Length: 133
Image 1 (cartoon, rainbow, N blue to C red):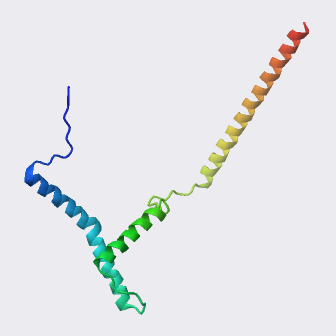
Image 2 (image 1 turned 180 degrees about the horizontal axis):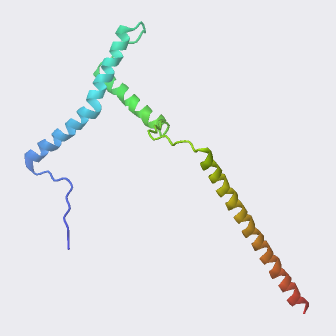
Image 3 (image 1 turned 90 degrees about the vertical axis):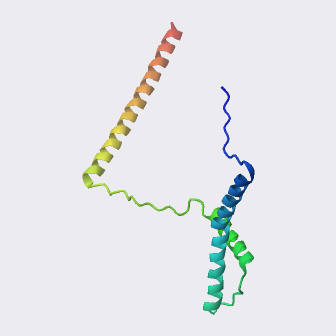
């Protein structure tokens, strides 16, 4: 059974126009509009404050937006974690139960290790007795 899966199919001039419209909307939404906002924010800061900043045009706003995006990509990897569900603290009874379980586990581990050691000693004793005979 042969399947012809086509993810994107552009047929004719109408399909080409729709594809160009989609690409232009993506560019406008993710590049042009944020660059326009950063340009206006920069120019506002340069005129409203006493900082000696030059005014920038739209192309420099695109570069400033690119700098912001790349710096967030490089330096912002999993450093800002926000947790909305904080765990509740344990009560004294729950802490005692946890400590008791830990003690029980450690004693069980000690018992198992002791059994292993005694089994190894028993095996060695049997081997030496067999060798002596």
